[in-house]
Length: 337
Image (cartoon, rainbow, N blue to C red):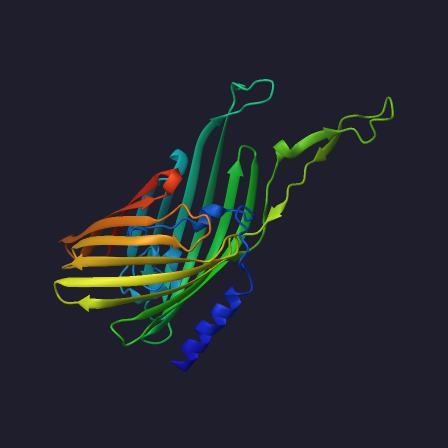
């Protein structure tokens, strides 16, 4: 227990090495990495680091996949803000005493857009697209019957027309289960990795080295160099517990504290009510205390069934209010067998 507390303190201290009270919105690459996955976690306001007991733990806290003895899979689709498409797919596979392996794919599609120029503001007739993607491999293991650790290795790519940027990142998570009403303590450090820089053939330009000299080569090939931007490094600390748990009813309450490198600190709160572990109602509030926050109230519901053998099917829905940006809705489907 003392070792666990010391370890959490070290993670908290590490989180203080970045961020501060100054908002740094818009100074990181690949912000899609901060979009939460799973309708269940979203319905709980994103307060899921201390629970992390389904396949969406691959995103929230990779240590959580070590607690399951079953293979799990999840598919999620969301019509994101401004008609963007956000999708997530992942699975975890226990491999005995070695631990648990997992993999996931995250994708944000901006859709097709017309190429416009100053001379042709209505469009040139060309179409370009833009998208973000992250592929993750995960490993988690129970060090004791109550303490788990997990890791993610990510390959990240962003693309817009003929330019692209690539990067790599690591996530690290821990999960400790106490003996007090199932109180769980989770911590996760995510997106610790390389800077990303856009490169591609559309950055090729022709330059006149000295326009004051007549007759020189005014079309010297050159490449525009774009800036390199860090990933959205985030430290999260979560608590979750069940103040009520009977064969018929379960109530989970959770709270996550978030310390990002590209924004101010905030708090997520959430709860989940389960009836016979078949019907679920959820509510939460995101980004409490965040400066200039748009997100807020989250609501969700879910249904689970074992109609076919020992395969658990679960369908979840979540609604998230985004203030002036209206709302985003998520659907996710998960299996455990």
